[in-house]
Length: 438
Ligand SMILES: Nc1ncnc2c1ncn2[C@@H]1O[C@H](COP(=O)(O)OP(=O)(O)O)[C@@H](O)[C@H]1O
Ligand SMILES: [Mg+2]
Image (cartoon, rainbow, N blue to C red; front, side, top):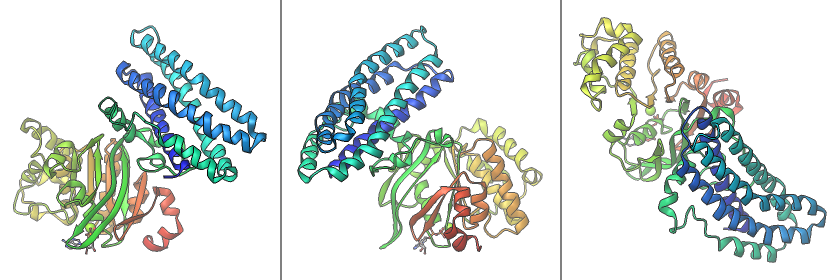
């Protein structure tokens, strides 16, 4: 890895930490308890690694050489270095404020404000380095300069990833990793992509899939898919027939083997979990083609969806489904095979809801339905979304899916080729040409 990448990677780690602190601060502001051990871990990290290791190395190598090569930026470097010098003092003050807040001597709002002040400073500092210092260094440093910097940064012992404090930091790392924005997500360290989180993605990441691969025999149907879904989001995965949408959902549910990659759900690595355990975690799927059990009654089909749930909650949950889909209530005792296609789709969604999903997977719910029924199915999805359900919606009907989705991914032959908000994708020329017939 080159010197710039090393520095940028460290910036990414620090950035993630700042985002995590912001997130926890907003929870505290909303009334959550102050977890002192968490903050101690964060401050230890910032003190030991950032304050005593990262900053001094920037001072001694990056800044020193930049002063030498570009005397005209001395003032800006002085300012950045002054921020380095004040860092440990600021951290000590924050530690005291956290302790005071834990003992009720400081309000949650006051602590949150102090934490935000600090993270804002930290982020501004990193952005300045990423957007002006490093590009400048790139244009003026000699090869010898870079070699010197690389040696200095390579000898770093980032406690976040070293054996030394691994146990202590593991939990923090997972929290941090799960809250990182995609632009600074795991493995990404390109210069200039650091972006403050937009408001909508403040919610924690519910699902993070990275580099997912899956094969049928020797044919690789998924070639390294990475997506994330945040709590309360509706995310659409659109793509032509055969793109790998169903394979993706089946691999996510654990019924199709994953040959590479990882799946994190609510911060836990579930990559190796059996499919029934994943359902228990709250990943419930309404499969492609509905697959209701035709000979069984509607009630029995719904009860099957609750097989991971305690029995005593089944009748109550079933009533909720019946309130949502009155037609199912009318016909509760009839066999599912007597339902129309649209009604079977409602039943399939209802069955998935019986598992009390915290992530609802819908595979082509509009497939094979008459246009009016398609509208009805999308109304149901809209309603679930408005209730706060987290939804991953797979559709060939790209326009309808993107219209209700917060964000979307375009899948082409096993690869994600585009991503953005639902509106961005609808407005995208390529998407319009390829999927929307416009
Ligand atoms: N059971 C299977 N055996 C072999 N190949 C399969 C199987 N299921 C799907 N595929 C292939 O994997 C690719 C992705 O299929 P699929 O996930 O069903 O796509 P989509 O749901 O987007 O239509 C296609 O090329 C398809 O032919
Ligand atoms: Mg499919």
